[in-house]
Length: 270
Image (cartoon, rainbow, N blue to C red):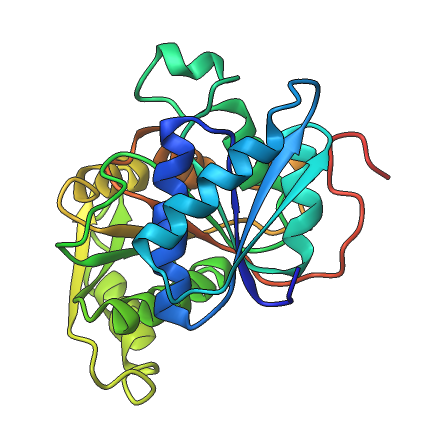
């Protein structure tokens, strides 16, 4: 796999093919190669699945350099392993093996595990997977992770030629409204010269951050949030806002993550 590729996991299910189409368009926007990965366990159908996924990607973006690989192992383990060299890892909301297929609102176990432990940014393509209208929405809270997400959201808005809606949500807004707006404005102002073509809307909302962003996802084409990074307790790597979004958002969710030295990040790893 070429370094800097957009990597997408495929398993033959319709949600995974939706993710392949989304990843192909993202590769075209970035001028990056697309690499399709199929995890082979015991079905013997991996090559057929990979060939079908390549055909789907090329039908959407025929100019994108597309490659594929079949790798023995469970989907989550395989995708986490290849994420170390990826510019972005893309997964569908759920696949054939997911118990969550019976509950349409919920993301599959593989996608949640990948979103939590991957070494690269992760896009979970769910809801209106082909959404092209509406703004890019970025959730910010003043943390380092949120600042990383805001940079990525600006890049996405610029590449998509869309507006960017920067959202700060607070359950107890009384008494901090002015300060919250000042923090939001400062984060936006320091990026204006780098992204002069991006039209910005700043929103300070009262309410639970996850619920606010899920609501805004219904009219957005993409929601971008940060993750906690690999330094904390493993169960908290994704964070409650990101976790709720990948289960309930009505459009794709992009989880920003800063690069860190690869080391054991699975539960129980030293």
